[in-house]
Image (cartoon, rainbow, N blue to C red; front, side, top):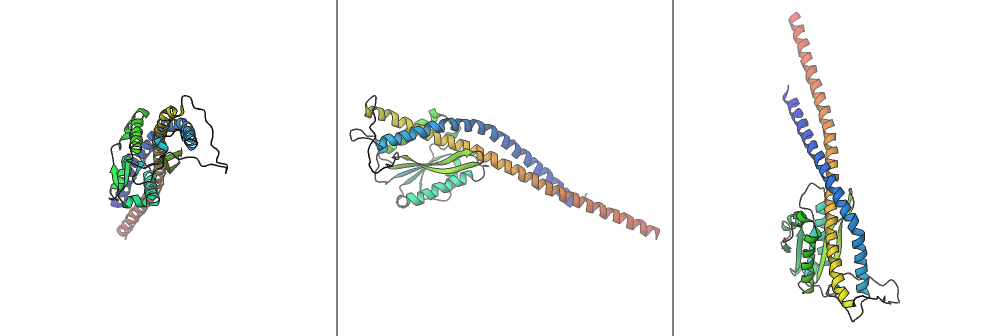
Length: 296
């Protein structure tokens, strides 16, 4: 067989092998996605409702009660939590989160960045890989880069508790989280959330009347228990969102890769058949020509 045909045949075998791998990865991601999707679908309504309740309560606090998590200070030191996956092969998912984080830093904390007061905490390796190669003027924290390997509330809540303590102590004046918000298997959105201080709801009317809540037990005791619990759940929700988004993005990317491999196989097989027909035609022509020469 001519060398050209052999090369095409070997390439066809290689594409078939790659297609089998992408199919397997798609099936694995689909199985993991179902579990991750169920987790975020169950948690998100509860978390969003509690977060709105927290913002509403803090917006209507009287002067006799307060919480350090709702105090707005002059922003000097900033912590940006970037939540990405630790593995690739999920399209532009991680890149979009990293670009959103960088744009957020440049738009909101440009002054703090110039002063060297922006720290980026990474959950997931892809965010760290992106930033450390490009930006040396930022401070990096990789203490919890492997948190996705143990994605349980019992593992994430101590991290949230430590970040809350650092905010309360004044180490950081603002903590924002950038993560991938899951919508469905084909759609994930890089999202920025102000985690601390807790964002307060703006008054919808000009009257500026405060709601009169009845607290049981007393107001201060309830705030000291309720606020940390809600913030810890909100932090865990961002991890679940990103986890589901990762598997959705990878399943979509592997499905597209499988389709592309199928298209490539069709073209290769067409080219192979054409080359084979040309080789056969050439051989027949040579045989006919040789026979005619012998007869002559």
